[in-house]
Image 1 (cartoon, rainbow, N blue to C red):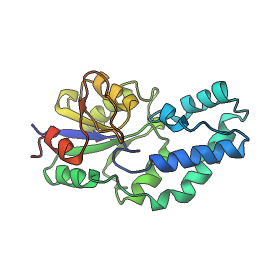
Image 2: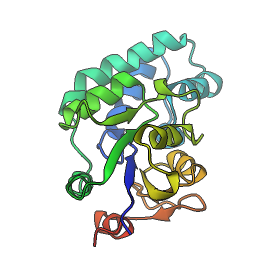
Image 3: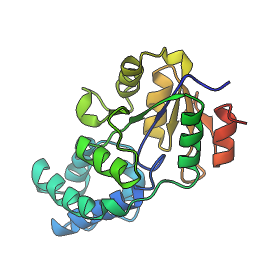
Image 4: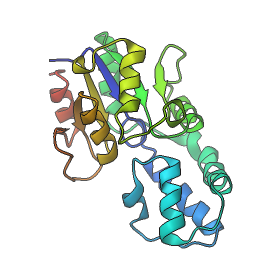
Length: 211
């Protein structure tokens, strides 16, 4: 059965932006004199900027203050973000849902400036669209607050909604919010308990009741 609302994670789920996040993270660390491990992005994917910073400071000796570090990262990211593209298959699902009158919103652990520049890049920066950034909630994912805020903003019962996520962090949030959570990872990894796993756009469509 098609849900009344679908709430999309942005980075890696709707937009193919995770590679740029990784490049920006590496560029910022190297500018600060820190050589990142090859698996760093896998360790922090889906997390908000502040928790990532704490990992970098505690485990890798990053000596910059948070504002200085995030400015380095965002300087690189913003310069390249206009070239971002949607994740393969995601925009087709988004448009099909829209054609069927399903309410949709963007729920991201990224800061507002990243949400806005990403959505502009793929032509989805519309005034009527509800978007939740990390700046709009007290607690980011894996806390359910961002998704519950989306339900509140759209006026739809969480039980009648679905969440689209590519990270375990985000999928945990969707499950905790009591929503049908579709875990669509970039790699073949296990999802958290309670999430429905899809490995292709066709599987996503089936789980959303789109045929």
